[in-house]
Picture (cartoon, rainbow, N blue to C red):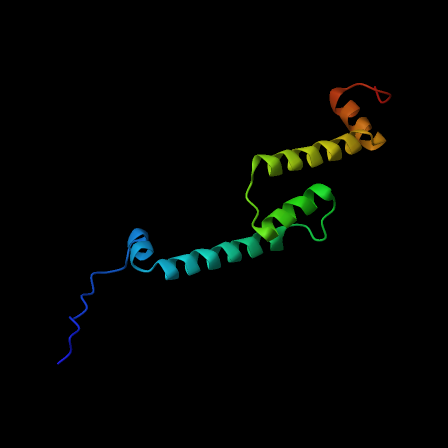
Length: 106
């Protein structure tokens, strides 16, 4: 005779039950899902990165860096720098003028 009581099949575990009953398995599942999502996102980003802002985002995703206030500020600064460079372009200025109906073309 076995000392083990029979297993009762009561259906699938809830997420909370899995986390409580099998914390190691739960952590492994979360880590695997996180890594798969990281890889999915990185596969859809332009490669190679076209600018510092895209490179920063790619590195944050690859490293699993949290979106802290500092990371947000760095991303915003890179975005603003990119916009400043774009706005200095004659093509961008001409396109904006055309949309606004001002400039040499009118």
